[in-house]
Image (cartoon, rainbow, N blue to C red; front, side, top):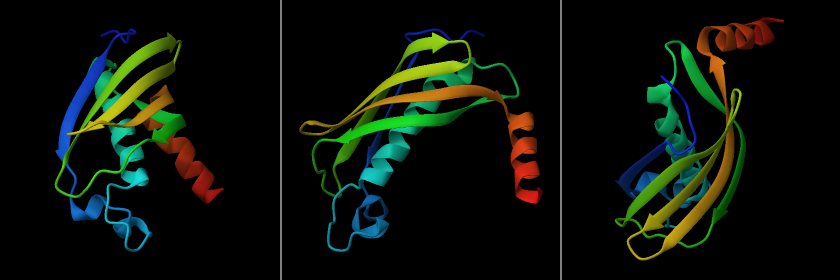
Amino acid sequence: MAVKPGLTAEFTRKVETQHTATHHGNPGVDVFSTPVLCEWVEEAACNAVHPHLEPGMVTVGTIVNLKHLAATPVGMKVRVHARLTEVDGRRLVFTVEAFDEKEKIGESNQERFIVTLQRFLERTAQKATG
């Protein structure tokens, strides 16, 4: 398996009440929240590369530069498209865009690193006990 620039992933989801800014601490703002947009753009980036990783390997996020460009009401669908643009050893760079049914609502440049899951979890556990 090879992780090379050009890998992509895309999904479409409906905005529901649990995805709103109200639900994420901003009462009365019943539109798609920025924290969920961030979650979805990271998920799309993961989906682009995870099928191409060696067994036992995963990616972890290190940088997310996100612009939330427009509000999306509950009930509207959001399409998220990620593209791997750069591979530098274990470092991966992605461009991700999000669109609702009317317009582009978000864009993100982000960085993830390929890590060995077991080693990553062991180091995290050591940190918690040490």
